[in-house]
Length: 123
Image (cartoon, rainbow, N blue to C red; front, side, top):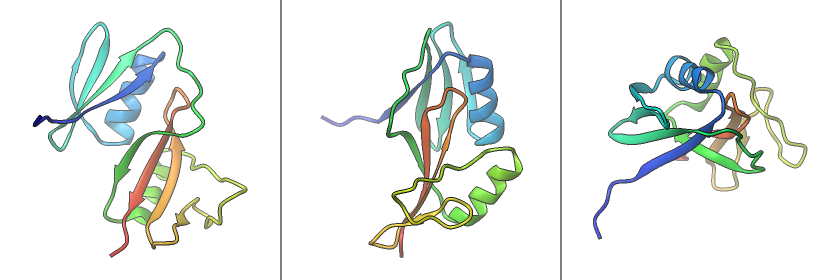
């Protein structure tokens, strides 16, 4: 089977989610339907489903690969995004963790509390 991925996230706060993904994260808005807000991420569709309640997931729900993690974190902090700190990881002052293989990762939450990661791969 040959297929193109579609990413899904959920929101109980459509207006806040649209602002977060479009204005803060910089994704290209495509459309707002009764059941989902649609964005384009470099040719991949993200459908943010409109739901009555978003469950608190203890893991990353959506992730983005970035070229310069430090720059991306500072830019998002300037837009009011707070990055997560975890007691079980060694993170720098911006919440960036370096993995054993050299990748760097930082986590924040969307308006519904879903965990979003930014990753800069090593090399």
